[in-house]
Structures are given as structure tokens and as C-alpha cells.
Amino acid sequence: MDTIAIPTLNRPVDATVEIPGSKSITNRALLVAALAQGDSILENALFSEDSKYFAKCLENLGIPISLNPDLAQMQVSGKGGEIPATQADLFVGLAGTAARFISALVVLGNGEYRLDGVPRMRERPMGDMLTVFQTGGTTVNFEGNAGYMPYTIYGQQFAGGHIRIKANQTSQQLSALLMIAPYAQQDTIIEIEGTLVSQSYVKMTCRLMADFGVEVNQIGDNQFHIKAGQRYQAKHYTIEPDASNASYFFAAAAVTGGRVRVKYLTKQSYQGDILWLNVLEQMGCQVREADGYIEVTGPEQLQGIDIDMNDISDLVQTLGAIAPFASSPVTIRNVEHIRYKETERIHAVVTELRRLGVKVEEFPDGLKVEPSLITPAAIETYHDHRMAMAFAVTGLKVPGIVIKDPGCTAKTFPDYFTRFFKMIEQ
Ligand SMILES: O=C(O)C1=C[C@@H](OP(=O)(O)O)[C@@H](O)[C@H](O)C1
Ligand SMILES: C=C(OP(=O)(O)O)C(=O)O
Image (cartoon, rainbow, N blue to C red; front, top):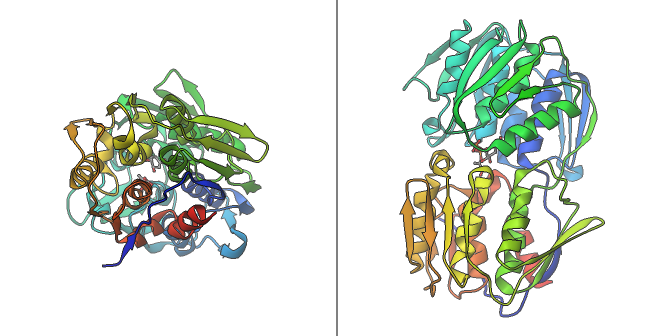
């Protein structure tokens, strides 16, 4: 297995970086562009495993898509809600958004669609959404355990109507239902049973739907009304830089007492993970937004924090990886749902911090990291891009940190290490 040794930086970082487009926005835009009638052009689209699997699924469903990675551009020729292919084998890798959004899309088709992913994807929950479809008359045949990949969906129509769904393990199934709801046979009311995790992503879904011409009426925190017959409008759409992936570069400024500017990101971002800036401010960093970039300047000494990260849970690893450098404990709460992601993330981050000699306590829904001296180690990444990207930042401060399987960043950020090394060379 490949490894990358992280060189320590014995000075504050001082760099300006560019981050590729948001994964979450790219995959939403691909879905709604596929449902619109006519050509949409997506600028600053993300080219990574997650979005390429998504694009390939659309192509296999007969929706023409042309990819221009050099220009970071994708063109989708939407079919107005039709799915031309009547049979398709669809592979989503480890992309949770592709798994959930494509499964919903094929319910609108008229045919037989088999979906599968890598072994870990077969362990990630799909059942709450699939039960909704089954209740509405769609047949789903599971090859293994009910509620998990691989399965075949026999698309007919999405019934819509009054739907109840749980969203305590992932919000992505709710986002998927919302995005196909305008194409249902009747108006749809979606009611959340119990708690909704990762709410900021649902907000992102509704904002993106609005950008493409479809209205969602949200009543309180847990009811969504979508009128049938609304249609997405094909359009030219520019995707923001990925705020989750920007977090590692801002974190580099935070731990080295340096300065990092991320170009083209704004505080008005659709991405909840822009709140990483508030987290860093609370830990002692300074944040400045200017025309065309956001700048973070790290303090001499980071402070600890006690924080509910339910809404920004892709940042748990970033915070975990810099937490040992704070002057007081860092406590992360309310993120039980990250146990269902690329890996069992609470356990993974706790295990790797302990490997580095850090004192850390694991809770059912989070962790507490004590200020600690770090001893060097080779970090296991568990096929999880965020383990590799986050612990590379730790390596800037401590000699001898090695990241195993750095290629796993390809899921959302194929050239992460190239940009990371460019940051330290500036
Ligand atoms: O809808 C989305 O684009 C996402 C929602 C979140 O997942 P959960 O809703 O499963 O927490 C997030 O972790 C993931 O990276 C992207
Ligand atoms: C959880 C993530 O991805 P997904 O659920 O889209 O696979 C992530 O990118 O951190």
C-alpha cells in the first residue's frame, strides 16, 4: 500500500489556495439537470470518484452527459423526467449521495435498474427511502439484506402523497425524495419521523431546487410540501468551491499560526460546512472575508471547544486532527450518524488519535480529545478520504506522520496532496 510522509512545517503557513467544486452541489445539480428538459452546463463541477460515478450512472440511464475536466465543466442533456434506458446496471462506488439520489431517480423510470457499490457501500443504510417507494407500489428486490445494496428497483412511477420517513442516520434519503417529488403522480408531503440529522444539507437541497425553478414549502422543521407538476429548468450553473474540503487548508493556518486564503469561497455559501469558520474563530483564529476569498489567520495558541457538530459532521475529523494542539479539551457531540459513513468515523478518529499517543474518550455520539503530546505514527485511513486529508494537517506540526493509502482522497479530492504540498511550498 502506498503511503505519503508529511513534512513538518517549522514556520507559519502563508498561502492562497483554490479548492475544486462542491461534491454535494455537483451531485445535486447533476440530478436536477438530468430531470430538466434540455441542456444544462455546470461550471466548476467537481471531477472526483463520487461525481464520476454519478455521471456514469446518468449516462447508463440514457441521459447524455459530456465531461470536460480541463474546464471543470459538465454538460447534461436532461430528458424532462424521462429515463430513456429500460435496463441498467448502476455502480456508485462509495458515494452516499450517488447511492441515494440515483436510487430515487430510477423510481421515475420504466424498467429494471440494478444498483451496487463497494463493500462498505453495501453496509450503508438505504432502507428508509426504499420502504417509502415500496409502500408507493415500487418493487425492490434485495440480493442480500433488506434495506442494503445490491438491489434491483423496478421503476414505474413515484406515487408521492403523504410520506413519513426517518432521517436519524442520514439526511440524503430525504434530499433524494425532495428532488424527485415534483415528478410524482400527486402532490407530496414528506414528514420526518423523529430527528433529522445533517439539516444543513436539506437546506442546500431546497436552495438548489429553487435555483432550478422548483419550490419546496417547508412547514416547521419536519414537514415539506412539494407540488406535483413543477419542472426543473435547464440552465447554466456555477458550483461553489467545496467548503468541507477547504476545511483542511484553513486548519493548516490554525495549527501553524499562519494564514491561508481560499479563493472564491464566500460566507453566503449553500454549504453548512462554511460554519467551520465559526468553529475556528471560537478556537482563537481570525477570519476575514474579502472580495474573492476568505482568509483564516491562526493564533499563537488554539483554544479548546465543546461543540455540537450534527449539522457539520464531515468536519469531525478535521477538528479531531487539530484538537490535541488546543490548550484545553475539545469535545465533539451529537454525531452518532457518522458511524454510517465511508467508515465508522467516530471509532476511526479515536483509534488514530490513540495511535498518535493522544488521550481521547469515545462516547456513543462523539469524542473528547485532551491536549496531548503527539508521538509519530502511520495513520490508517480506512478508505476514508477525510481521514487522510485531516491527519495530513496534524503532520504539519509533528515530525514522522505518515498517511497510508493517500489515494483514497480521490473520492472527493483527487489532487488533494498536490495542492497541500503546494500550500506548504508557498
Ligand atoms: O447530502 C449531502 O450532500 C451530504 C449529506 C451528509 O451526509 P448525511 O446526511 O448522511 O449525514 C454529508 O455527510 C455528506 O458528505 C454529503
Ligand atoms: C460522508 C461523505 O460522503 P457520502 O455520504 O456522500 O458518501 C463525505 O464526503 O464525507
